[in-house]
Image (tube, rainbow, N blue to C red; front, side, top):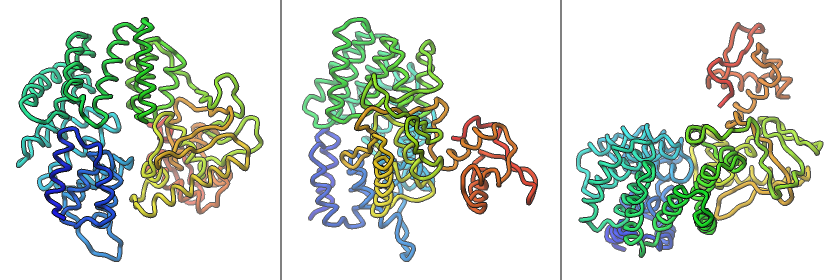
Length: 498
């Protein structure tokens, strides 16, 4: 096989928006075994085509070798592995690895770090990284254009309207002289979004029209994203018009068919904003795990109240059924409860943080075991075992919750009506954070001793001391005194452990 030529063909297909059929070829390549000198390039194709798990499989032996093997990874291998982790849901591990890369030898690591921050809705933090990437030496024309499109996206989504307009005007001109239809389509869509933000509706419509014409033969999601943008624009102009609302809901239904979760969330947010639907607004707010996203919602609709507590009613709007308090693990209507802070309670809280996007296995592993690296062989097994135990517990206590699986991702559902009680301040799911919050309910501002923690957590003194030490290191608690007179208080900077 002529690897270089084959990789070049796949790269060209992606640049021209014809990468929809690449997965089959990638799977075949990975199963045959990718030579190391081509592994980073194959991983690059994998995440760009929407299959980062394949890139992880290819690069894991080189970037995370067994302890018995002494093997140095290249800067490019670490860079591509880091972005594959980010795209697969292990964002913190990916960012940590990318920050160790020598950006002079692998400039793309700067752009990939920006991707990791954008995934957290930190657009401001991404801007300096993208600018540093664009100052890198030896970037070819296409790489520079990719960087500029990402910078324009950060400007638009970060609210820098004038900077975005200037950059996008120049970008769309230069891209129109190239064959990079996918990049041009994205630039036109970003221009439309920016015009919507300043309510220049006709200019937005012109951009949507050009983008649709350009992408009508593309195989990816880009054309759908443009049509979604147009439906949102029409609705925001006329939110009381039944036709524009139906158009928005039709796009939402298509997003469900495509399993494009962020578009479903976006359609619900826009509908709630336009119709001032208090109930739907709170559903989107509580059903989104990122605090930066929640902060944006509070800013764009300060007149829509956010509840202190939200009841996520599942499998039935009018009938509630059993109600579980996610903070404590206790269930109203049933004698059973999940022990707060234990593995199953933490897993349930993780699954309950997002009503829209199912959790990929790497994301679940990262949240369940934040101190461990992702292993494409062993990590999925451990995460699935935890899911199996949670399902078994649901059945034992006759709680109608289920963990649904589809295409390797996991999401909460219900067989019969039930509800989860979620606090507005409860965005945490690590075991230590959960345990600290249970102490806060008991001791308020403190102080308390290690023996108090033992009794409350029902753990041995040794285990409690280990967790208390970790909570002090994490900044959740403040320790005073020595030996038997040691006491603990909650750190004044954190009203809730996070």
